[in-house]
Length: 593
Image 1 (spheres, helix red, strand yellow):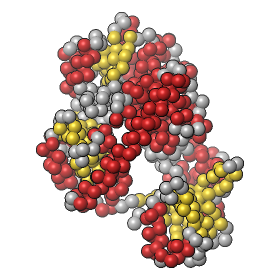
Image 2 (cartoon, one colour):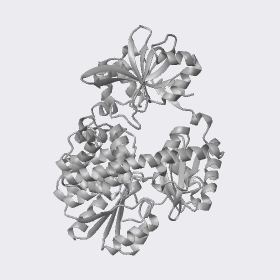
Image 3 (cartoon, helix red, strand yellow):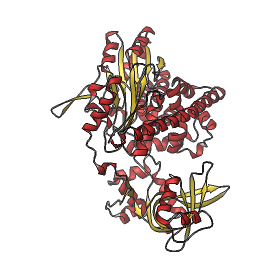
Image 4 (tube, rainbow, N blue to C red):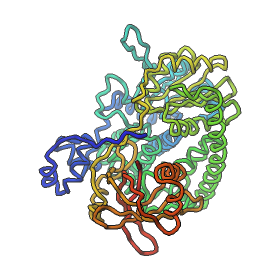
């Protein structure tokens, strides 16, 4: 059972409420987000693009930009090498647009997931060299490509790295020695001696910051002026899209980028993005992080999984609606196919875990040789959600075994993999996600090493439900829902606020949805007031809970005419339902007991 806890962080909520013209409830929620100082509260509530950090604080930024401007002046050929996921695609597009604006001789290369794998490799370096490339500019990769960059240097090419991943290190006697690749310039906020105040930005934001400085120096203006130009706004949309797609925490600067980017997307001038919204039937005015994370973003990722991510880059570069709609339709169809393959892979992984004895492992490693290697990360994420444990999914590839991992808060995936790095031919990632390649004979050894080194406790595996405010539903109102919108955008690192109501009576219920997977209930609090209570979670598990607690007969009656005596406690948040011109207040149940 989940551990419900009320956030007990203290502050003078009334004073905060008066100062910022909000309710004490909102003041309490903001304090629960560890936002305490006046300047931080003001930035959280009112922050805009003026509050973005200077790109010049990134180590090697001016060095990288000055080199690129020199290469542009000399008409040297520049090749951008990106990555095949949302962040890599958006990073590549941002750099390409910025360099083109400066008159660069520039082209792009996005690795093929199966043929090339993640990041730089000798094959990509050779192809760039054969094409007459003078300068390689990486994005969303490169920080771990020490040998590959050294090889490019030997061939006479210059390399500039822009990345956001963890810097590789070797540990001796508890001391980490970080290994920076031998590029001309390395722009990555994760470097130890980088002064950037918020290192948790994605690769596309790093690329965006570089373009701001590049264009400012090219035009003889300031990066702030470039930011507020038409192109600055257009590229900010893609930086926001990637921030959501790469599941960055929506805190500090990320939250501002996403909030401003979502507002710009409502009237996007990117023909490809508009076409993708159209084919997925997304209304631009209602775009949210959820929309990007679960509808639009997967269409971009799918092409990098089942085909080549160059298609997604072409979508953003499209110059006419007809071309854009054609590409967007293809991406959507590919994502529909990817969903079917993913579901089959998840079934296979669950079957393996539950019938092979590894279900008791603290870190799950599922070796599924026949699963499409591009789906390993998605399947690992589903396994992590189902079992509440860090999970790796490994599959056969052209040169051994490849895999992806998805983690939980208490398990730093990259650090744990570094403890057994001798098992890999290649690996990289960060705290919550990672990728790897290894010889087939090391698969079982990898599983054992991870679990032998694992220090996770039973408490780490216990689901923790943090309640912002214990508050009966009677206090919810349209005004409260409107005020809660000040906390948006919601997502990783900035979850929707959660309220708790004890002793809620369920009077009647209906099962809705094409897949019969949504519950709608009439609920009643102590005051006698009634509410619509919606549940979008695991309905089968909820009904099993009701049967075990109140009996099958009363549970059946709940859905057929109503019943008395079913009383539960719920964690919920209030929401507004708009249907056929009618606006009603409804509660969304997140947890129950």
